[in-house]
Length: 231
Image 1 (cartoon, one colour):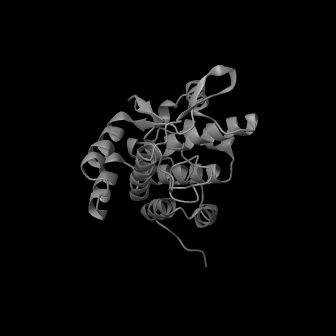
Image 2 (tube, helix red, strand yellow):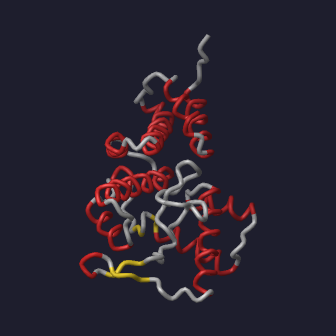
Image 3 (cartoon, one colour):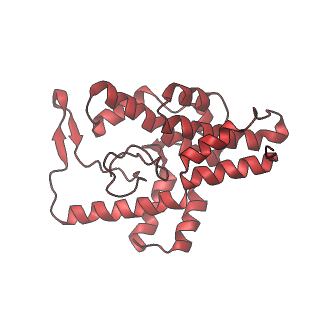
């Protein structure tokens, strides 16, 4: 006998599986669902389902489906950080596949300029590596005073920024790792890309949310979704 879920339960299950990074379980759960209602009373369920579908599309490298999902629904601001990362990282990955080489800082900048965030996942605030400036400022401010935040502090930052606790934890780990590398005398942070453009071998962006030492980071969420730009 098939289980019947309420709209609230569907949204909850989607959010929990997405936050945990259980893409296979999330994919299986989505396959059991009927088409979600678009009535105003069910918009919360619809958004959670569409967000989960977008994450699965990214995980399965179905980027055309991902772009269609992200451009076709006005997502609420709480969903923007994750969906912005999906949008940007997918375009990074497509560009790298076309060029058969990793993108440097200049290459990533050009991709972001070519494929700006759609208004459905952007509230108009200036972003950098699809991080809102206020998010970067908040994380940096805490880091300067406490490079090793407690679990409670990470939860508070998660609630304040819209990032997951895992993303916050990864940001601090990567920032500490980058600072240690800088203190260790790594001065060669720039290389010349094709055409003479300067590209950073270790980009200075603070928007790395992947687990530290990821072999090919291109995004931001819990594994197996972790693939942001290198720190």
